[in-house]
Image (cartoon, rainbow, N blue to C red):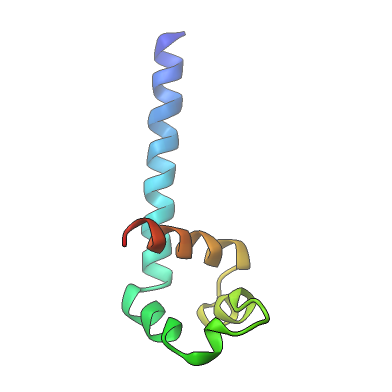
Length: 73
């Protein structure tokens, strides 16, 4: 039972690391920063759909990438 829990948490950690890696691979920091400096990003409506389209990722994935960025500042 204890090994099962350990394996579960180890797998979850590996999945999270893979997700972060993919986010930075698909949406590089320099390109994201460049887009975030553009004036339209801070204006309504929500910029997530356009950013997601720009980087050809899902809106959910873009939200996660921005969350990762926020955690690293």
